[in-house]
Amino acid sequence: PQIIVLGTGSGKSLLFFSVAAMAIHQTVIVVVPFAALVDDLIARARKYQLTCEEWQWQQQQEWKFLPQLLVVSADRAVEGDFLHFAKGLELSKQLAHVFFDECHVAVTDISYRAKLRELWQLRYLQCRFTCLTATLLPVLEPVLRANLLLAYAQLYRQSTIRRTIRYQVIECQQDIWETAEPLIRGLPLPLGSRGVIYVRSYMQGESVAEEMDCPFYKATATDKQELLTKWAGGSGGWIVATGALGTGIDIPGIVYIIHLGRPYGLTSFMQQAGRGGRAGEVSDSIV
Image (cartoon, rainbow, N blue to C red; front, side, top):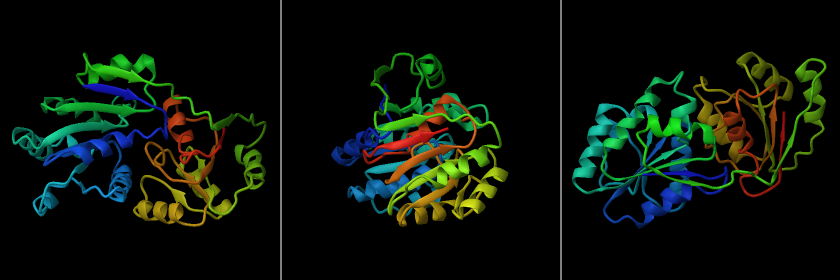
């Protein structure tokens, strides 16, 4: 097994795309922590002409052939149906590799997502196993190893510094939005460029989205995927978001990441700030 730590935007997903492209009569499983990442990953894989499907028990019976890449959300990856299916692939020598993308969540998110504590069960699959992340603090490495039964995994760590991100912290002597609003409205946002305003609560998000006349992305919205697709495919502009729009989302043209208030933690901050400059452009992270 391997643990690979590379910076946001460094092309970690190319690792499993390339393995899937080279696999012959086998499939590569990619476990992702959030449902929002499933659709994003499938779209990107198909852009590379890979056959890619989301694993669902009902739909897999309709497949005419095994896809090169099989994407499964972490919540489903620990269910008996999926584990039985994956074991069957292993026994028939059709399982090439298992990747766990954004694996840091097996440390940072287990307090409120119980199923993430069960991902160690994937280690019973006798195949190559690779964990990928951009935000595994060295102090948390032993915890990840313990949680995923990776005591002897080889670690590959590259500097995760993003030199194209400019960081700025502004102290507020008054209401946060009173300080942030004139700053945000004064930022140049040419056609095709985008900015994300992260908020700490739904109430704050609704208010800011109304003030900015822009969409609000939150985990509980039933139309969040359609909203995100429309914003990402449009002519640019602002979007207000909770932390649900963070890990792994790859959208070009984001040049501003604004946090209204202190981020919840260093890991989430680095993930969210890393949404900027995905195509190599300079971006600004302002707290």
